[in-house]
Length: 86
Image (cartoon, rainbow, N blue to C red):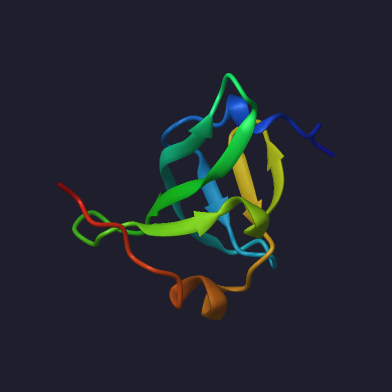
């Protein structure tokens, strides 16, 4: 069993899984205030050409080295808002 880590350790490219362990995509961006230790959420890339989906921090279930497991199943994840790329 992997040891949980802080949201501050999450890096771009980490695997993101649904609550049942199926892969959803990869971390594209972590948002928050490091100085205040406030985690806002994650942008998750789901494919090479698609816009990423935004996952609020309250939907992040477990963070271990190299992997983030959400508290959402795939269907709920697919209903999340897409992030605009500038």
